[in-house]
Every structure is written in structure tokens, then in C-alpha cells.
Length: 182
Image 1 (tube, rainbow, N blue to C red):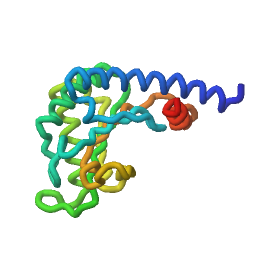
Image 2 (spheres, rainbow, N blue to C red):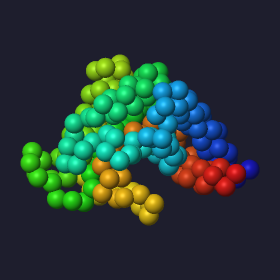
Image 3 (cartoon, rainbow, N blue to C red):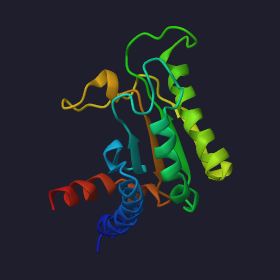
Image 4 (cartoon, rainbow, N blue to C red):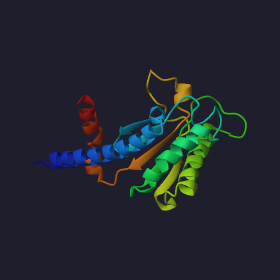
């Protein structure tokens, strides 16, 4: 076996492990009737838990969590708490100019990420030592013609970071694409 083939095979194992986490989270959400509010994907970084839905998490220009957002975070929290991986909480905003308390979309997206992080740590017991908040402002929009970008980009992504070496992680998107084809 070549080094690339060994790393690809290890990526398949890691993909299956991440999918197992996604399935556990999905079942927990489904049990609460919340499965439509979250989407899962695997990237070269790990498992992305996309919290995207029309006004479900944040109103326009706001970082205040809605009641549904609290419910979803509190449903995901116990599963995330029991993982060993680091978690990145990534705030995003659409490209409309902000007004009010936020000078830019960077601050708005950062506040959204921090609000989700605080709920996970303070209420759900996710260890603060393995979670961080990041802002992407309006710089990483969802590129999907089937969704309204102004709504879809008012979002926070939770990323369960894969601990495997970069030489293995680089193959995760290929493995995910192959798995999607069946």
C-alpha cells in the first residue's frame, strides 16, 4: 500500500467515526422533533453541525438566542459534552450592513458564536478547555442556490474537530463524497 492509500483508509475509519457522532446527534434531535433544524457534513476539519433555519436561531442583526435555539443547543449539549474532541463554535452573518449595537458583521457573528458557546459551557457542561468561539463575519457564506442566503447565513456552525493527522484529514472530503454517492 502506498502512503496515500494508507491515509485514505485511515480517513475512511475517521469518516465512519464522525458519522457515528452525527448519527447520535441526529437521533437525539429527531427524538425531540428537531431534526430539520440542523444539517451535518464532514469536511477536512471534522464534523460540521450546521445550525441553519429561517429565523430559528437568530433574528436579523441579533445574537439573542431564540427559544428554539435554546432547545436545539440543550439537545446537542449532552452529546457534545461527552465527546473528547475539541469543538469550534463558528459565528456567521449575511452580507447586509449591520446597525444598532454591532459596528460590523464580524462583531455580530462573534457574539452569535459566544452566545452558543456560553450556553454549551454554562448550561450543558461542555468543558471550556476544549471549546472556542470564532467569527467569520460574512466571509464564509453558504453557497447553495436552494436556500435564501440572507437567512441561511445567520448561522452558527459547531465543528467537532478531527484529531487525526492532516495527512489523513485531507482525504475526508473525498471519503464523504464517495459515501454520498452510496
